[in-house]
Length: 223
Image (cartoon, rainbow, N blue to C red):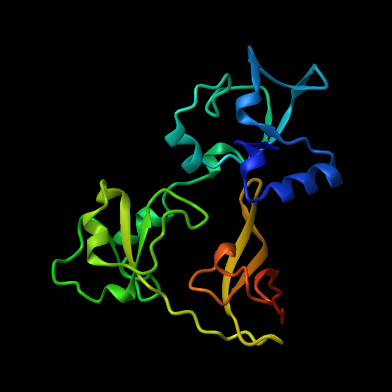
């Protein structure tokens, strides 16, 4: 299981469970050694050859660091990939300003915001290339845009007011549905992840004091 500084990730508990239950070793990208087309990591003082990689490295985290590692994810090496680096696509938020549809919240690049826009309470400010809610501003002021050093790398997106439509013993919660796709020869929808929230966002950090929030599985009735 390949990750960047796995001990610092919020998902480190998942890595530990994967190792304990499946025997898959978690290895930091900076610890990989390359010899020709082969990759290795050290375990118990010995080099262990890598033949399969379950890739968890997120490009948005890796690229700004400019690390000089022995192994580059773009190298042509003799390994089989589970989640190839090419599968991480950097287009989701970047594409929003170009989409016009009732189901797509209105979005501007931060350097192209209309000068007459003034209902800042209805907007959220997001860095283009971030994840896990990093850098997102929920309560936006016009001054926030003026303080951004690179506004072309940010978007201003109209807020979506999620309805608290799921009843729980501790009161109704909001639901965000994400689809999990497995990809072999073609993408296949395998499961749905439902994120339940009572906070301003679906991020776990915004729901630490609430009950009946977090992740659950969505089931679909057939027929």
